[in-house]
Length: 405
Image (tube, one colour):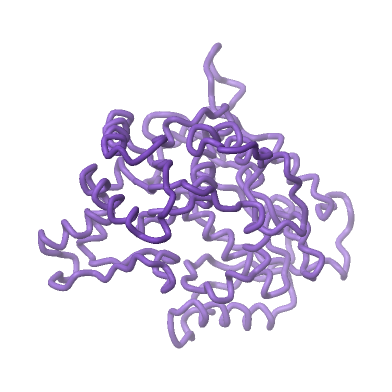
């Protein structure tokens, strides 16, 4: 989901008899509006927190890219001791309810509470953390109609000595510390903050929404059949003290493959032309899979041999996927693997061919893909998050290093 969509000006009240349009997640929007820190009818007070709103947050991007941005922006706000202003997962913001993606209607905006939980969307911080509660974008516009300070991106970024994430983070923290009014800034793709970010309560106390966890529970026997009775994930309470690592424990025996298809082929060719490296967190030094762009290319052009190297990493064939899996299963970390799940947006016929090839190796007890999940009407439009939860709990995950998901 990277190209700009066509816009459907289709108010829900005008749909044709019998027409089934996507849900608009009204109950989740109501939940966000009713957060106790949203004092809609109360006057502002001197004790109200200062806010941080990222005006130019991503639109029209896949959920993986947006999720990374939300977490990083929330971490910056936490470090600055400001109330983070969270926003919708937005495909377009022209005011229409629906957009057209691949000839089908999708919601133009999905409330974040339909996808995730935790302090970044207004829930309580852990007891040992003192930080203002996050607020919704709608409440921010309500409470800060006039008293705003705009910080242009260039004002912070132009003086920076480098583009490393540590310098970007320090630049914004210094700037935010120097102003007293409620503030919003411009977006930026902050990169490798991992040594610090991994310990942030924004990340350590993050969870997926009840809607996503319910889809996980419903489909558990599809992607990782249980050997013994385990309580459903949705039956385990999520509290401010719940740690992400404790809630989403490893599923022994599960291998997850992330296989992008569709229009991603053109994106991979573009990456090859510009000799791009892996994306963001995929470059962390502790990850076992490294990728150094092969030499021989020029600015905007690459050799046919190098293009094939990129395609093997970015848009592999079925044969290349099977070969990579055979390499992975020989690793010590892969001992005991018996189930394989393919996260993919591939066409049904192509996915069936990949699953048949995996079964033909005789190695797997269970082979499934995203297309095998049974999802209700609301879960269908947050399916990327369902896949991400499954991948997060895998014993071994083979991702696509050029993708944000």
